[in-house]
Image (cartoon, rainbow, N blue to C red; front, side):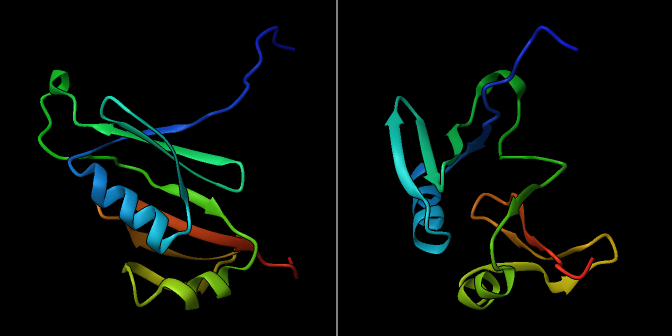
Length: 123
């Protein structure tokens, strides 16, 4: 057993558009702006937080990049899908998978892939 503990893990993502990111996450996904200071914003929903900050010069990138995705486990993925499918750019539509999840993928305003999913109760 480890002597180290983790209190939380918060995604810290870069953006070229803080205001557009606030608008996408609050208007489309129902997050609240829970903090803002010196090029950083905190967006929260249901005790979960995502942090965004302005692009940093030290790594030489000119746009936000991420090779993975953010997986958002939601209560009723069908309800989420019906509520936002016309407001977002879909990566893939609502689908049930053999690994026990029903999910869909969307792109946020920064180009990050967000996957929203719920466990399939029959598995």
